[in-house]
Length: 319
Ligand code: PAF
Image 1 (cartoon, rainbow, N blue to C red):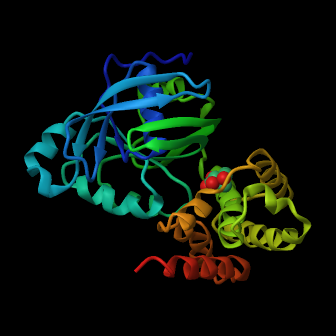
Image 2 (image 1 turned 135 degrees about the vertical axis):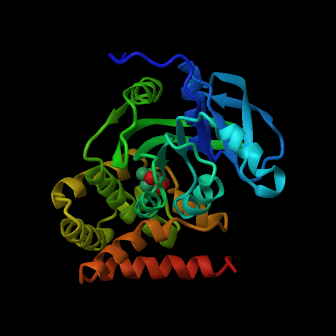
C-alpha cells in the first residue's frame, strides 16, 4: 500500500476501449475507482464488460461510456460529462492519439491530467504543445491482454508498468497513489524518457522483424538476425544520445534477448496488425528513430530499411 491517502472518489476516464484500456478499467475498479470510457464509436451509455483473469476467473462489471463523436451528442453534453474529470488515461494506438485528444480538447477541464500509454514514441511531443493548463505524463506497460470479444478481455501477462512526468503540472500525489495501488507491478519513474527509449528499442527490433518475416518473437533468437539487431540498437543508442538520453548497448541487447525468450511463443502486435490488415505502429517506432535522427543530422539506415519494408506490407491493404 502507498503512504498517500486516496481521494474518496476521483473522476477518472479511460480514452480508448482496447485490450489495455479495458485491463486498466478492471484493475482500477477492483481497487475501488470506477473510471468511465471515452470512445469514438459507441452510441450506448452503458456496457457490460467481461474480464477473464490470469487464473481464468471470469467476472462482469458495468461501465459508463461517453462517445467523443460530435455527431452523437452536443458539445454541452461532452463538456458536462468531462466536467470534474481529474485524470484521462489515453490508451489508443500512437497514431490515434492526436485525433482522440482533438475530439475532447476544447472541453477538457483546466486541471485534468493526461496520461498517455501506448507503444512507440512521438505523440507526447505534439500533445505537450496542445495542452494549455493541463499536465502530461506518459507510461509504458508490458502487461498483456487479449480481446476475446469487443467487451471481453483476457489478461495474458502480468508484466510491469512505468509512469513518469512529461510537462505542465505534475500528477497530484493522490492520483499517483491510486494508479500505483491499482496497477500491479507499477512504478513512478522520473525521468521516464530513458525507459520509453528502452521500450522503443524492444519494439524497434521485435515488431518490424516479426511482421516482415511473418514469424513468432522467439524465431528472432536465430543467429542470422544478430547483425540486423545490432545495427538497429546501435542507431537507436546514437539517436537517443543526441536527444540527451544515455543508453547502454549491451544492456539493451541483453534485455531484448530476454524479451524474445520470455515472449517466444507470441506474435508481436505488429505481426498481428499486418496479419489482420490493420495500420501498424511503425511511424511511432522505427519512424520516430528516423525522425529524431534526421533532426540531429544522423543516418539510421537499418531502421529506415525496416520502416520501408513495413510500409510496403501496409500499402498492400491500406488505401
Ligand atoms: O508490441 C508487442 O508485441 C510487445 O510490445 C512486445 C514486447 C514486442 C512483445 O510482443
